[in-house]
Image 1 (cartoon, rainbow, N blue to C red):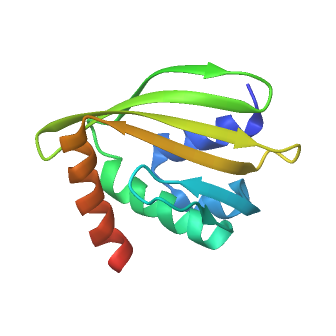
Image 2: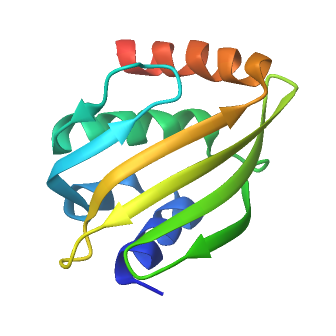
Length: 126
C-alpha cells in the first residue's frame, strides 16, 4: 500500500488532522459532492478535509472496503449523521512524493448529502 494511503488511514484512526499539512500537495484539488467547482490548492483542501473530519469522524464512521492501485484508491465509507446513515466513496489520488493531489467525495442518499452539506457549511463558516 502507498505511504500516502497509510498516512490517510492514520489520520482517520487518530483524528489528528495536523498531518494533512504534509500529506496534501500544494496544487491539490478537492471535489465536493455539494460544491460544483473544484477547490484548488493546499490551503482550501486542508480546510475542507479538516471540516469533514470534524463532522464525520465519530464512533459511527468506518471504511467498508477499498480498491487500490499504484496511484489511487477508492474507499467506501459509512457514517451516521443525525440519525441518517450516509454511504459514500473517497477517491484519492497521490503523486510520486506520496502526497495527495486529488480528493473526490461521492455521497448517498440525497437526504444524507443534505445533512452533510448543512453540517459542513457550519464548520466552514468558522
